[in-house]
Length: 119
Image (cartoon, rainbow, N blue to C red):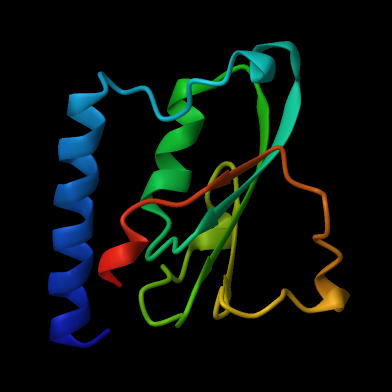
């Protein structure tokens, strides 16, 4: 990882912690998810996957399938698939359709995107 990438991850994580404290640790407020045991989440513009990793703390009794896309993979942590729950992070430009081979069409319960206007 290059020094400027470490600084960017630090900035994004500080931003995430601020937003987390502003919402008292609530990442998703979707009552319909309370009835589901398993749900699939896509984070569009996931950077290093911090939001996805923290999401499991809000739903400790649920099975989460966590996916993230970002325009480049430079910020993806090397251990993303080893985390609990594992993160499936992929490089992709969200202005173009996902490849059919990913078989993601209509498969997510939640699609999260925030602050992408600045990207």
